[in-house]
Image (cartoon, rainbow, N blue to C red; front, side, top):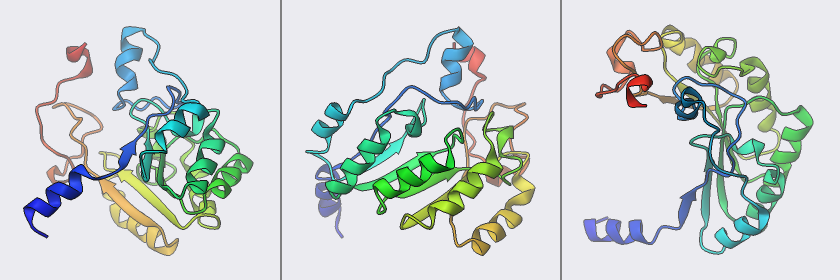
Length: 217
């Protein structure tokens, strides 16, 4: 594929990432939500309505529900939104890390679009993931991730490498293999020099000029 073809394909793409709510039960220290928390401000935004979503799907064929300051499962219209993606043959990736929904709710969500991919953010061994995903029940969410395989075509385990899990990578890979899970490791650049979450092994983070959040406010 030559450069011009790549350029045409890029500008003809019909994919979008949507942050469809302002809600999340987690308090991950590396999340942009913490900027507002440190200022004593409410996280801005609102829940996308079904009417608004129907307008969007007229123009796209691929959607990623990946919140930058939220988790998509907390949009009260999410089940209906998922059904609309299925009815309109839209490729979907749901990226989630919160664990504060019931098992029955997750089953309903998976059934709304069995073609959807779900990506679960569990950073490290499930028992340790809460060290970054504050308030997350990692072991419960791991069970939900395994449950999803009965209802959807593709399930992915996303793991960000931190100091507390960098020595568990071999075990994490083995767990993913045993449970037939797609596994993606992410290396963060959101570390300042004396960050307790920063991996000791330099290959597990991206070196950039990063200041503590209090210096950015």
